[in-house]
Length: 60
Image (tube, rainbow, N blue to C red):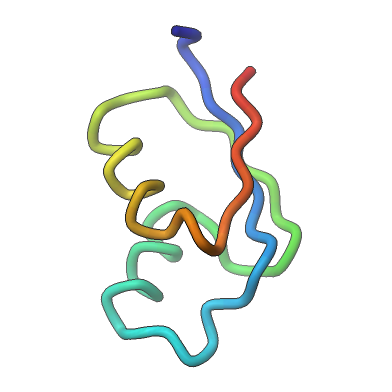
């Protein structure tokens, strides 16, 4: 398992619940097609699992 993970917002959070939108904001995904690289932690994996239908993962 690598120590970083890159993810991109590919689908809008409009129409999603407040919890989903808060999770996207917490991940740093504020605009469409924004790519973020973070340290791979269990907490981050849990957040990405919650919004997996809106993001694309590129493990790096």
